[in-house]
View 1: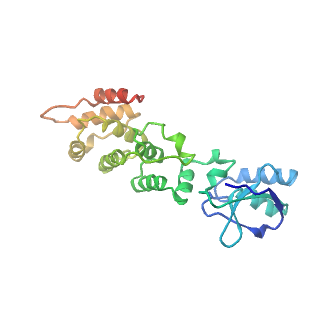
View 2: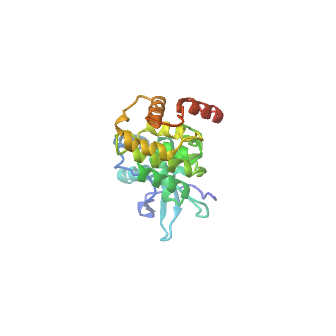
View 3: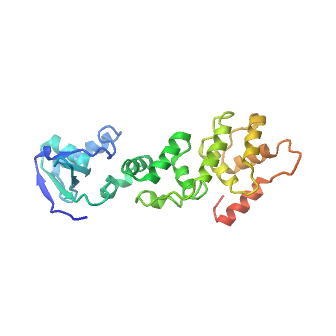
Length: 262
């Protein structure tokens, strides 16, 4: 990426908004905008925080980062500092943002998904289709149990990659079957419990779904994922005539093998 010299202008018509950037004035950050306005009114535009742009096909400079700074400077009538980057690289707001630490997981995912990152788009679509919390979706598609945080360090940088599709879809099928009988089947602790249970080789998806249908009244809210594992063991083995599966013990073994804390 070749950086062109930093410039300064009051010609606000040179710029256009980037549709992939998160919302500016409508994102509930009114206090932050007021603080920015007061700062710029007092000190002018800070040279150390130029607007980052790329040249669009219509010749204008598309803002990649600095929408709030641009809008505020325009409203105050003060000149903006800006840099135009080449378009021969994959560009999205997160790569330039000096404030990206304030972006939440949903905003990060949407920005990458809209910018053509297929792995992010896939996880986001799964999350929207199933209702499973987004962070848990990222963990499961990364080949981890839902409680793992190993994927987090890759998400913000754009380096996240899908490694496993069987696990999240199996969890989703079971959770959605339970969802007909309770209002917590898509909540974090229940999903974590299911995600851990299906790492047990002997765990039978059809059996637990069948028992939800027969004994759905046994589903009751619990305070933790561990308590839900106890509940799932009870439902899994309820009225069993054959071999019983001691899920609490087997999940503990599986997690120790994976070196995942309970």
